[in-house]
Image 1 (cartoon, rainbow, N blue to C red):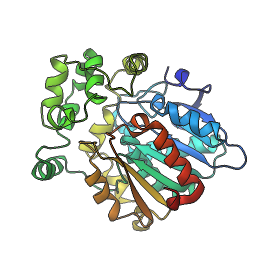
Image 2: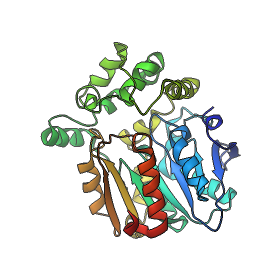
Image 3: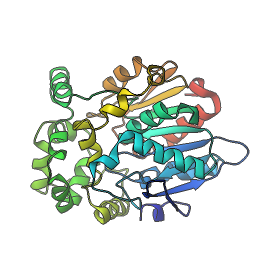
Length: 332
């Protein structure tokens, strides 16, 4: 369903372990590079609809998959299926299938996390990287309680309190029962809402279980919101929430420990795009995450923008991608 709403017919590939991935691939023309677009939560390839059209219209190649658990791709419930190394290998197989030796990787939200690990395992497949909202995430454990304590002290509220709710066994069923309510929280008309109703522990669960619904933002039409809700309703939230549970429960520890130290650094040109009104994956956090491992990078802050940069500032973001492809970091 997600692919049906993009501007090009979708493809389906069964990777080595039998998992089926759905994706859109529009080949490049005139030897231009191809962008690999990796979405986050709670999303699908549909969230790249504006970039798929604008980039391909200019002759750039675009490959936009529904990531594991989303859209028309398989939605396993087994947590082990959501290991970074396994999903990285899946994407490498898609690149092989399409004959793409190198791409410009673009990740948003959890897509940035996956892009980080695909680069760690397959650095030769990328000519450049773009991280939107969330910067490069280096291999290693993630201490949720420590992050929440640190951000509460710094910003006055914990930014990842909602992860506690997402880690509960019945969280998927709760979100399934309140799909429209959760969309109105996830895609807010007022970015400040996240400070009170998403970041603090217990706040997101209280919002959806009370079936709170706010008006849609100006950048998301009722028709687009319905398509989004239908995509998520088709497969449910249980599978997508495994992206959170995998990190919280540290199932990637053994794989991350085997990544060579040299591969933990990013040597290709890297652009980090952040919104100044993203109050969860905050610009300050992205800037801090970028400094340790990115060797050639630039932070680009988009003014008056929250978390959904590719939707809220669709033309500006697409222009940033084109400038980066044409002139590198000097073009942004």
